[in-house]
Length: 197
Image (cartoon, rainbow, N blue to C red; front, top):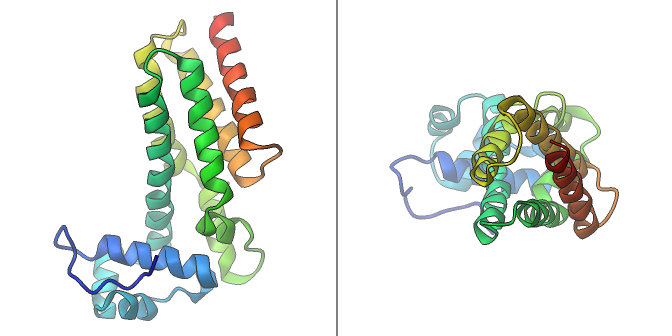
């Protein structure tokens, strides 16, 4: 995938193109290589347009991570759509799909492997400052899970979803087994919680 796009934007702005260019540049050369000037050149706009569309570099970082999260959440949605009557299988397939996508995700690897200088600015967005990411993911999962009418009250369901989402994120950042085996373990855990309730 190339970051440069010759044609104009679909929605009247260059925001998506800039975010995609930033992700490509980060995956290839690291976050410290991302500058508004380089993004302007990649997209074919002025530096001022880049600033107008994404604001500051920290704001761009957040937008880039949330954009990448969208790809992972699309996997979750497909898993639930494919298993409308089997919650355990939906959870299994969602977790497995997310972890498989994470294995080959160049941007995620660039963020997780950054160990020095300004490249470490991105890592907190997936760890200590992941509130926006977690809120978005938990909201989507809650919307899908509640359709199965699990035997949990609102608080129990919220706690369970929070725990599962955080568990999956930890495996995204630091896998301890294959995606298939981890997915089986997470699905088993979620099923046990539901049965205990």
